[in-house]
Every structure is written in structure tokens, then in C-alpha cells.
Image (cartoon, rainbow, N blue to C red; front, side, top):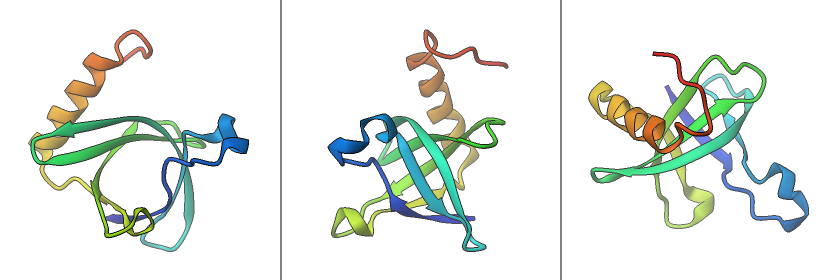
Length: 103
């Protein structure tokens, strides 16, 4: 499952309240709104931790593939479960004071 970035990390000063909102297009062409929770560098990659604003049943971890221009950046599904778990552990440790995690 690949998801394409539409607007990642808004930089419009008028939308300060929505700075953490990311709208992605899923494989069916539907726009899905997420809140950006964290960005983590791990190994040779940059990973973005998101939670869907409508259905918050858990976080989504996507790998950032940088394009020539920020508009060309792409977020893709993390295929390697070990990497996804390692990134999630880092996220949990860094954010343990802000979220109640269920194990």
C-alpha cells in the first residue's frame, strides 16, 4: 500500500492550528486526513508517525522518500516489520509523557 503526499507539514502561517494536518491520497484515490505526531530518523531512513483524524485506532508509520522538490516527496508503507517496530519503540519512548500507550 503506497500513499502519496498531498500536503505534508503545512507551512502556511494562517493555519497554525492545522500545522500538523497531513492529507494523503490512498490507493483508491480517496483523501484521508492525518495528524502528524512525530518524525523519526532511523537507520538510513526518515519515518513519519501519523494518526488518522477520523478513525484513531492506532498510528500509521510511513517512510519519507524525498523527491527533487518538497512537492515531490512521497510517503510509502514500511515493508520491513522489524524497522516499523523499532521506529514505533523510539516513538513510544520519545512520547511517553504525552500519550498513554497500550501494549
